Length: 216
Image (cartoon, rainbow, N blue to C red; front, side):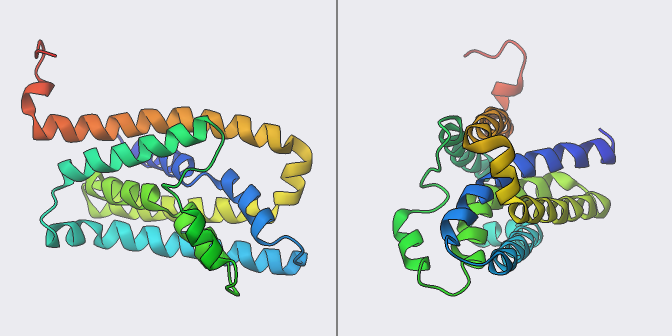
């Protein structure tokens, strides 16, 4: 697979996992009653948080896993299960507790900058996105591949910022129903990505699964 095509696949995967449309509903709820200027600042902080968290995960994730004795195949299976749970929540057009819990939302409500917590992390750059960044970094295979991944992360952060900056207009144009439909479509795509992560990890852990004619 060419570097460009691989980068495009990674970009699509990250967009689906981060789900910028989630930021539309979230920023409206978290900044209710605030000025447009404050919402713009919140969107910027959230995008910066996404970029920093996912870049750090891509660069240092595999090293941190090795400290705990966790291999990439095991992490692919575990991360795939987590992402699948997120996908199921998206198919129901709701936000699951795999992103953040009600307690985390209540704790963050009194903080000055909700763009960092809970909007940036764990809502958008949550466990699923972090897991994906680590897995994609392991698949990069070269410094060029890693460079493309980091560029993809920056693009996702910028896209999320643009979507949140335009949240009022988007809500007026497509409405909450349109957002829910798009979320369900992304959930379907995300479920396929989750299964591919799990399958790759299982085939490494159990090589017999990768053999043609292997017993089910």
